[in-house]
Length: 330
Image (tube, rainbow, N blue to C red; front, top):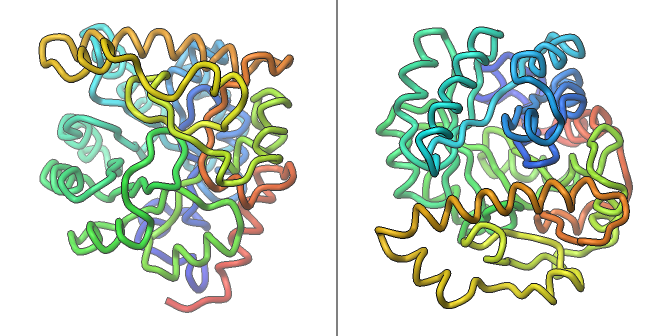
């Protein structure tokens, strides 16, 4: 490794490029995860996507990825489940992943302590998604090895800070921080590393690849969109999600109804409402993202669409981003 590519994150994982293909529901299919890892970055498995969307039994899905690459892969663990069943299932998935040799975990929501306690004795690493300092402190206190700084330009559930402000807010905690959000061009990756990030996590850029099984209509929408076309809607999960503005989204509206907002605020009802939104969104996003007709136009994406204007193989994405960063110093 050379220049900006030599970071605490890349050294700890033993990868060539500190570039993560972030876990995406429903877009994380095995072929995409494997292609990013094989090229020198690291692909992260999203368990519900692997099983519910792409139809693989979890262990067999991991073994399929292993047949495609022998290089490191990761797993996303959404640790604040809306039901006891989901929490038990996530625990089972973590155990299977460890048995199959996965040693990198990205946790989202909740307290990652139980993941840390399970993964560290086996030599694994845990990075925790954060949007501001209070969540970074909770992750640090739980013993995580690094942070994924989700900024305001990200897809999925973006945070409130821009990349510079978020790094300034969490960068003094003694943990490597990955930049998640707004990176669609190689030079943006190099800039994030030059800013002091230990790596970057990409989602939208990797949807616009041949390896991703998202529909052509979805990919075309990414290629044709600019950052002003990305809006936040509460109608998917009850909290703001970044999506491409389409006639379908405008007809549906961006805000949850007054009753839903009230129920999401009340302590006794918020978990029930989150469970309702979770079940509904799983079905809607699966249908819309894989639907070849483009009828639903219900597509998640971040502001990095501004730098994405063509389909590029996942390996080429990794290599071009590495080339942009390899000449710098650290």
